[in-house]
Length: 102
Image (cartoon, rainbow, N blue to C red):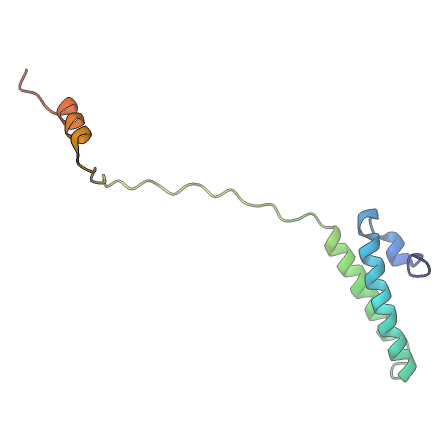
């Protein structure tokens, strides 16, 4: 990756994030060069801000994703639903219904 890849911020990143961090470091270097060209901030605070932003982002990328909470199933309704009619329903009703035998 050249000069950008040898930057300490990029080297400190985990291996699987180095390419992404290198791209972002190159973008921030281009922005810092524009600021330097116009001589607006000669004390270097803009470059320091960019470096801190890059470190924060790389640390954020390296964090594991949040765990998903397992949601319990809702309670079933206590009200019985009406069954559809038909020949099977009548047979079931006759089979499990009350009888006159005591």
